[in-house]
Length: 123
Image 1: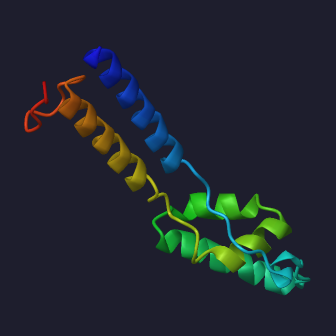
Image 2: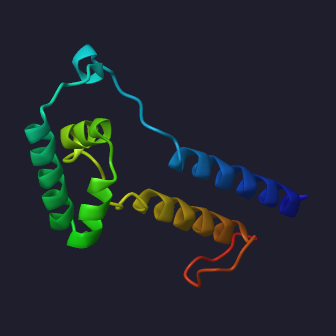
């Protein structure tokens, strides 16, 4: 009976942690953020150059950054130009790693798994 309870409780907590780790973030949308800006051709070219420069500063190779920016539409350039400082640079996996670690420690403490030697099961 105890093994069945341990199995189902660890499965429940694993699923709950994965759901919490993958939830999206909601925020208030203002009217000015929904309005599309009308930019001239010169401003769009300058925006494309700025985005390419910022991507290179974030660690993207210059040729790849140029190719990606060139393939973007004007609307995408406007959106990225407004949000480039807020966008994550691929460093969002930390929460998932912590969740997996916590799940493994909990299942080790319950005696379901034996991954970590520093956790002694409570039998």
